[in-house]
Amino acid sequence: MSAARIGPIAILTGAGISAESGLATFRGADGLWEGHRVEDVATPEAYARNPRLVHAFYNQRRTRLRDPRIQPNAAHRAIGELMRRWSAPVHLITQNVDDLHERGGAVSVVHMHGELVKVRNDRTGDVHLWDGECWPETPCPRSGETGVLRPHIVWFGEAIMEAERIDAALADPTLFLCIGTAGAVWPAAEFVHAARARGAECVEFNLTRTQISEHFDRTIEGPAGETVPAFVAELLTTMRVP
Image 1: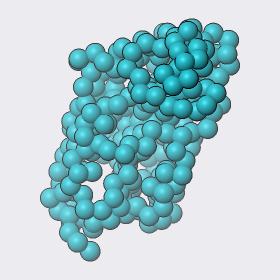
Image 2 (image 1 turned 180 degrees about the vertical axis):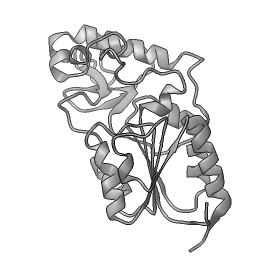
Image 3 (image 1 turned 90 degrees about the horizontal axis):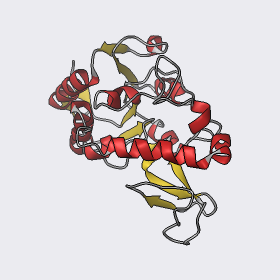
Image 4 (image 1 turned 90 degrees about the vertical axis):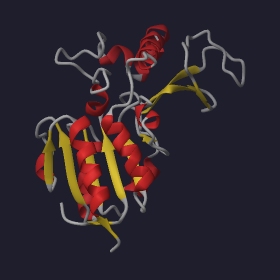
């Protein structure tokens, strides 16, 4: 790698980076998400139809996230180090709803699909940190109402969160890194085009080439826990002031 010009970096991560920590990817080869049809647990209609099932599903995922064996991996930690040491802004956008980036040292993470460790009052929009179970009869910590708390998750048919922060992150990057995502989900699949249009060098990290690999300057194949730390280490070693 030649000397790196110091400038803003935008990073997009997907399910692949969390899979290396032991969390299931969004949808398996059988089309199911941890044993459930997506239509039964990840749509507003599913929640209206059977809120108890939806809460049970996310309670299970929250419990899984708190398993002591589920820890940030080397890729999470490398990104956290890059955010601490790079002398220009590093914007981290993730499609993941877990908190492994934060636990790996990242700050101000943009969770475009929401966060598993939060719930939201569906009437007021108030968001609350949440570590345990949540059920239809669970009272809202602020209002005391029951039947109003829902997972702070973007379901199919709903708009992504923090769109303005995402636009700002992609406004002027000199480098765009895409890690552990196949680029199959809109609007994340479009981020590389936005970055390229602004002159960013675009680098993809994945186990194999993806359906959007042709839009990157290069694809680095292999486990993120190996490729990302090596890339970050070299980037920090070779950085220079323009």
